[in-house]
Length: 514
Image (spheres, rainbow, N blue to C red):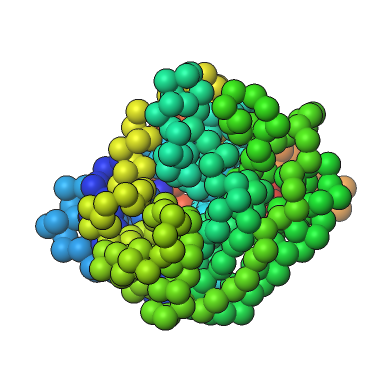
């Protein structure tokens, strides 16, 4: 068996290819089942975010597995294999584990250190579990990756460097960004205070965007979504925070919004306006923050996504964040230009942040005079120059340790069924030979019979003890699976007996103790 990942991300492909390779939510379950129907695939999971699409699988043949996973990405992403192949990367065994753990820690994200990925990993695991395509290996791998990601955020300062895509994108839109950088400060979200904002979508990223804007002090917030009920639920939760924020010590402590984003790791790093400080810049909210309480949250309302409602909201909005993706919605340059033409005098042009993949806002909007648009492509370019946190190396050390531990545990678990089958075979031989002995010596007394039985079993146990202990030790090292194969060959173990011994690690351990 081989752990394999085949994928494409913002690090390997241009956004124009990445957005076409995106897997629509409605077909993800079908993709997993098609993978499971492929001969070399034993388990399968999909990780699909705004800047990566990756398939994880346990396969019994490496080259056949790579071919199947690559073909599925091309088929379901709508990109021809010849076009997609140059941008695909392949990781297997320990390299695959290292890759996923690195992703979980936010080190492979467009914005290094962001925590939104943990929520996306949970969603990927939940889908594979719901569709019953994740077996023991992928369940353990993804569960461990979540623990590694949480450990990285709790034991290092990676959060200080990391932002969500929302906060990073808003920082890029900051009209005073150049002045802030010249003064040695970082761009932030202070400029959104008092604005009217439109968030398109009501999924986890949209929820994070809405919550972030509410905490940053926008005056009015409109949530647009194809399913109006979801938009209404999100707007209601923000209104609930508005009701509690005025009496709270910190806007970031509003419990209603902390459940909205769907990812506490990202939501917990929201920001509020600093009272004073350099150029009124923002500061992270955390334990011990001594800034004055933020004002009550914005008025929030929900509208359905259609041409009329979006056009109407574009005329009024100062800031638009779109996070839907794969829904067929595209804000064309002409639609945006038309809305701008009907804005009130002195209202100014809106700032647009497109976090969807595929993109929701036509790239031609960049050419409209006065309009500020930041999308995944421009974020990728900006993040390439972002400074790496000093804690990144500490996170890499955690990943290396966890990969070694997981690999050793996985290899040890892999050899356990072979050891169980070997001991079972030895027990069968002992029972058979004792039965023959007792048949030849029918007059043997019960006491003598018990002594002979005990002695034979002790001899067999002692003969097997050293090799089984040693093979478990060796199994924890790279190439340890070869020792299990050697045992099966030397003792001519029945493959079906070995497979029968491959239950859970707990049951295997119990069998060995017995």
